[in-house]
Length: 337
Image (cartoon, rainbow, N blue to C red; front, side):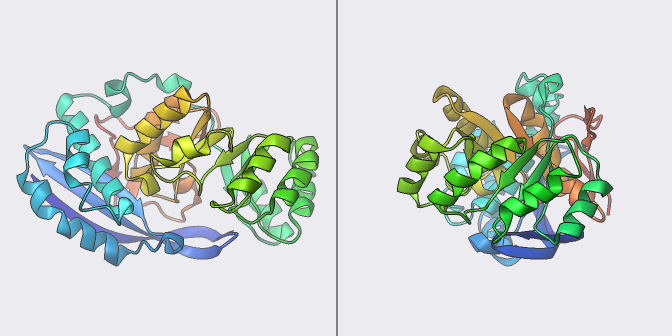
């Protein structure tokens, strides 16, 4: 087994702003596993909010090299368990390795990942297209640039309702809104009443991740479903979100990969919660991986590669009518630069 990894910068089409950060470049790390004439690719993007950089991700992957290259494993879940102590402080790095392991494993099996998981790609829900915080004119222009049947609108300003009112004048497409922890419980409950009349499907992470008492109130009185994001990072968070949120948004990068992501989705379903997987502005490597498990989900946010000025990979092709997977087995994404 050979492990290699390298850094890339993903240039965005537009400055992407959410409640706590803005960026024009998204840093990413690509992992490659090679064995017996096959290779697998995985990806993790960086995130300053979580303290994840290209440098510390690469350091964690290097620390795992001996285990990855010398310890035998039969299925990706085994490698995840074997290496988890190495990645205890860096699930982002573990995600890239885990994703590459699943790609390699299913290629060896002669199956696409969704085939191995016995999933039907016809059941993939429509992805939303994300509009970051900007001036009203620019947010409208972004919607007009990509005419899409479902938008996620990033909020967290002093005029959030005005933004949704203004955007609603320019499209009939449903909205999902994501406040990225920016509201109080009182705001979320109050805003939900008007947002429901403005054809908003749900609110994602309206409060700070530790505001459990506030979320009890929002869960009880909100006129819209609420979906956990920052409050649901790892497997142990799923049960904690039960009774506070109607569903969870699993980010494979933050959770540590496909292996824990699948377990989180299964646990949420057992609890009667809605399931979603979101992206972290990955290239087509990470987005294609998400697409393979999307038939499991109620909602999906896999527009990351659509937000890039230039993709560094080719993989799943997503339109508002269909999701077309690459011809190869495994996850199937390939680097192009």
